[in-house]
Image (cartoon, rainbow, N blue to C red; front, side, top):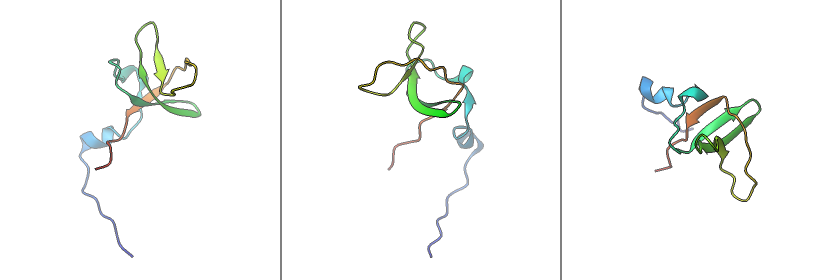
Length: 77
């Protein structure tokens, strides 16, 4: 059996893996992972008139107020 090892993570990298309060989320249109109880989705802040938007092409726009967020993971190498 092969054991997979990883380098220890820096504290700054670990904070990116934790859910953060929505009040700290970027408001510049950056796509992020969003959470509200029982639902996780990707989306972005569309501005004061649009609020939080869900990345769901082809579906009607939905208004969901997330409670937490975290950055999307890096793309595979």
